[in-house]
Length: 599
Image 1 (cartoon, rainbow, N blue to C red):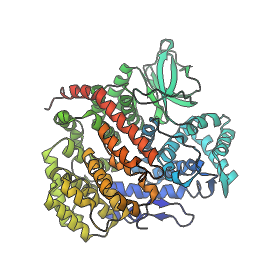
Image 2: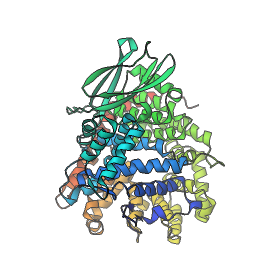
Image 3: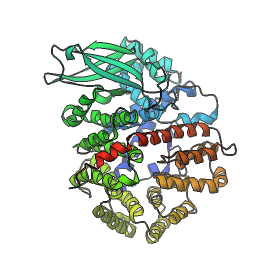
Image 4: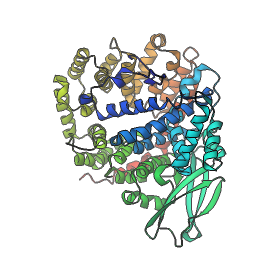
């Protein structure tokens, strides 16, 4: 369906899809496009059981539909299409949810819903990724077989009817013989994410686990307590063991069942826990250096995400953060390197200033640039899907942040070939090449060539690719012209705005456009979408002045539609966190970057 903003919908017997998801040419689709189609299809098919066969009793249990559809959909995708590695990639979704949950403006997964105006905001990463991660944590604690039995009993008891979270807990408790209700309620009925600290005691034969709510540095943690299945991984005399303990108090000691002191301990075995974790700083550094031999891929991805969280919490300094990330950038698994890209993308806005851009470019060349050299800038026969999926991000980073003239020239060559005949360029590289050329050498001539190609194609996927590239132009006049291209569909305009708002300068232009054309936007967009405009106006912003200007504009009663206050509050907390992180750690990051050898 064209102009279909939900992406897909699980209507029984008539699943609907947005055209840009479904209408792809398998021979000309990128890895990202193929993955999206497979995973969305599996998610919607899973809804036939979770959502259609058994439906939530009310909107406060929306997570019962979405979390379970994500959980089951990913299992089916992994089995049918193992090359997608979705079972490992789902860790990044949990990391994203925990980032949201770190803020005081977060919400509980289950929350009262009394009006239509907040339903769209309830369909967020908490309902999807957090819910899926929490289900996975309890599946690991109970064991897959008992968990599956509980789910089957739940579906059988409520088929063709409605159910609540309490019904699910009852079924899982009956199947497992454990009280599942209280632990699950602690994750679903209160906001936030726990921070679990692990300290070895009893001469290294026991562990002391303590919990508190995870918050950003300088924020007072509200008193919150969970019942947490904590998975530990440790080694005794080189023999690796895993155990799960249920942490129900503020702090508890647990015996590890060893006769000698353990060699090391990791606080999130299999990266199945929905919690942040901390260990002694020397152990953290040692684990980072030896991660490739001690931790599996899921654990290494989780380690990178957790490291970013510790930076935000003031528990790791900026220089140490960049140094430890460099070790993971050399990881042999592309999915771990992808996690490093995500981590650097989130941190660079705060840590990198105009004065440190050149030294940061050297850092990028020595880390991600070397990984690009290892996998090569062009696709290779029979390479893993994860390598093909990583390459576009590495090309972007090497060109835009690493200032590598060779990669920039390579991107321009690809663009010349693509605009002559799209079939000449691998679809996985086309989008990255267009965006790189626009961001690094975007002039009137290139802009006009992209516009000409845009006029020549009606293929939804290609048009989205071209609009995304137009959002990367840095020339203010060309950027403004892109925003006024006639005939853009809702999805195409969204791709353009999202792309432009991915830089601080671009989001400033988006905000200026909103100020000039708000009345027109208000007539074209449904009110529930207007509430999200501040997100694009503050993309990558790290300035109190920007924040004040955006707040004053959208808080005006003439523009403060239902849901705007909530979006503003979340973005304000995000921007202020960036400002505080820059003040606290940018100097330490700069000091480390000065030590990076450019050779």
